[in-house]
Image 1 (cartoon, one colour):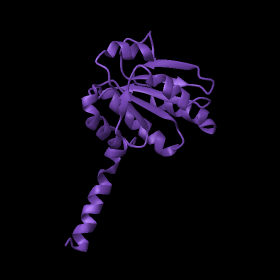
Image 2 (cartoon, helix red, strand yellow):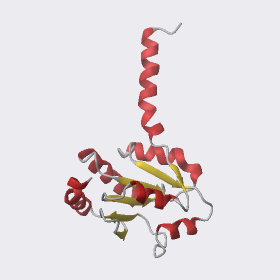
Image 3 (tube, helix red, strand yellow):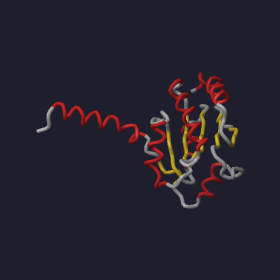
Image 4 (cartoon, helix red, strand yellow):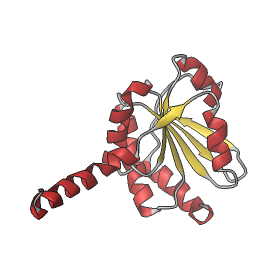
Length: 162
């Protein structure tokens, strides 16, 4: 029989591991962007393209994690462009950056160019890549790391619409 103390530690260990479970990214396929846009229809949101091996992406994820903590209603869709077999590592990074509750996807098609094209025919894969969606569904794409002040300004401008 497990002692009460041992049971407590087992439970505490399981709870501490939950953020990694909660961020298990979903497969991103050619149809996923349409589903994401439908889910967020009528509300502003950020679509963030990133990759495990991209240091600027990780710095930007940390900023987004802080913004998500300050603005819990902030809508963020995170899409890792890594192969789907990296889902545990992606989940771990998102949990570490405070984004364990954010919607997350991971490329799930061997034809990466096709997936990039479904996101944006004018995007050639540079990372990080952010799309700032307005409530009307229009969007602006930005390649490269976005300054924290610019991200904060966008969030504050749209905070009453989340």
